[in-house]
Image 1 (cartoon, rainbow, N blue to C red):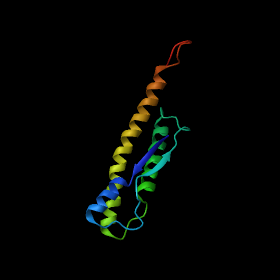
Image 2: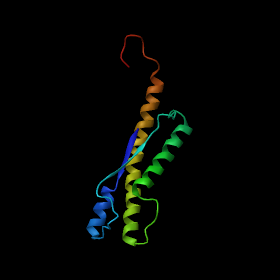
Image 3: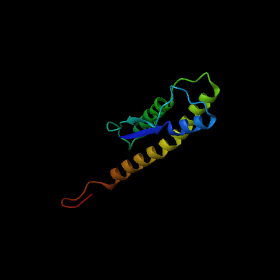
Image 4: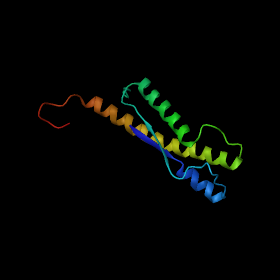
Length: 112
């Protein structure tokens, strides 16, 4: 499981413009993304994880467009920046899972 964090960038961008609304988050937002049930050595498992993370990014940054242009720009920047960070985490998790799968079973009495 890993967490998708955002809103810090969105808040900073909004503050520079000076239009932080009362409904803005006061700090980073974390959304847990579980993948314990996925086989990340398969393309379908990888696809499912990417879809879950994409949904988590929208949850963290906001799913509904803002009528206020500045806040909408902040929301879009949050989605863009959080997605880039999340992709790096996804790639690392998938790579680690595939490395473990290719390593094979450990010999008795040895560390793996």
